[in-house]
Image 1: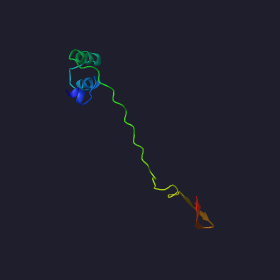
Image 2: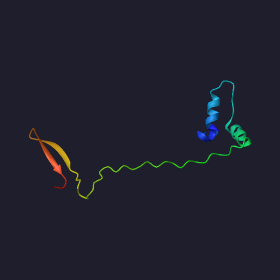
Image 3: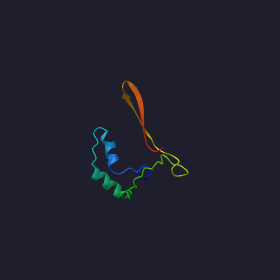
Image 4: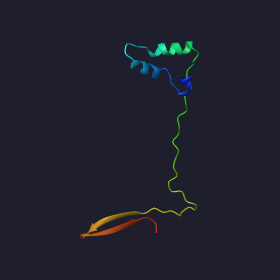
Length: 86
């Protein structure tokens, strides 16, 4: 059935039926109908973990270094200040 394939619980069909004029079906009613038809509750899906991205992966340690460069105005001239190793 589409309910299991699309992982529709009991709330989504009730929201869909609200769009139809002159049809009001509560969530417990849909739950009772599903139970009567033999559709048990859906299993909860585990939350997907976001895969961590390895940003600066290198073959050897120390192959990649980080430096901070700041430009400062000194007496009307731009001067670069470099912070970091090397």
